[in-house]
Image (cartoon, rainbow, N blue to C red; front, side, top):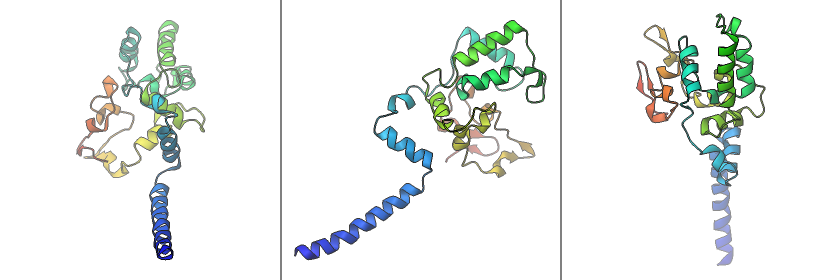
Length: 199
C-alpha cells in the first residue's frame, strides 16, 4: 500500500512543481524579485504608503503655473533629484525649447522638484520609480524609466495613433483622468478614441 501511494504522489508533486515553475517564469525578473520581497514584508511599508504622488503646496502651485503653461506639470516623484537638477540646469535647450527662468524662479522650482523627488518622499509611485532605477543611470526623461516602461508595456503602438492624432505618453492627463491630482489608478484610465482601459 505504501509503495502505491509513493508512486502516485511523486508524479503529482513533479507536475505541480513544473506547473508552478511555468507560471512563475512567465513573470518578469523584476516582478518576481519585488513580489518575493514584498510578500516577506521587506518592502511592504515602502511600497504601500500612499498612492497619490501630488503635493498641494504654495511651491507646487508656482511650479504648475510656470511649467504647466507649456506641458503637463509632471509630479516630482516621477524622477530622482539628480534628474531634476539635470533638467533644470539646461532650460535654455529644454527638449528643443528655450524655457529659461529668472535665477530666483528657477531655484524655487528646483527646490520644489528636488525636495519632493523620488528618493526623497515616501510615496508609492516615487518609491517604485527609485526601485526600478536601481540598476540604471538617472535619466532626464520620465518615459525612459523602467517604472514607466513597465506600467505602459501592455499598450500596443497601434492605439497611440487614433484618428490621425498621436497620443503622446508625455501628456499624462490625456489618458489618466485624474493625473493633475496625482492619481494614476488603473480604474481612472480613459484612452481617447478607445475608452476605459482594461489590462
